[in-house]
Amino acid sequence: MSDIVVAKRYARALFEVAKDKGIISQVEEELKSVASAIRDNADLQKFLNHPNIGDTVKTDLLKQIFEGKVSEPVWNTLLVLIDKRRQAILSALVGDYVKIANEALGQASAKIYSAFTLTEAQQAEIASHFSKVTGKTIRVETVVEPKLLGGIQVRIGDRLYDGSLAGKLDRLSKALV
Image 1 (tube, helix red, strand yellow):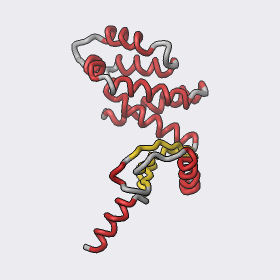
Image 2: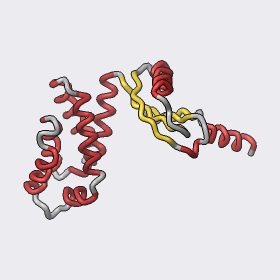
Image 3: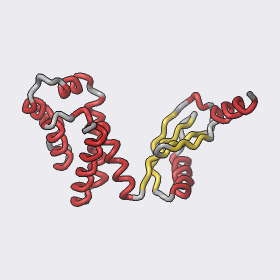
Image 4: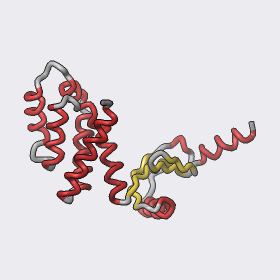
């Protein structure tokens, strides 16, 4: 079975457990922080993915790092991933979990790219506008991208709404050619 399918199944199972316990958002945040901690530490990644290091040793290290800091469902998921030697799918599992949770909660994540830092009021206004467009509650993440020159780009799922100056100049260039 492909890692993509497995990650979706694990994410679905974890979501069902989180939903039963009423901790959907908490599990999402914990998963993101665990994946980030592993992704940001190259030595830890190598250690967890090394085929000659036993599961018990890996589990003991994860206990030192995460036990007591994450909920039981997240901890058990980590243990299953190590036991089944599928720790490499953690990032995909996080992405799938977020998609499942957003769909169930009527939410969508929006990544706003702008040439400058946006104020809280501007972020709220953009979230409100795209809430009306999508019919979902929008959770905003902002990224400063100076090459946009001005304006914003908003990515929600696989859709990109481009209102940036760089995008307009690019479209104008293509129209003139």
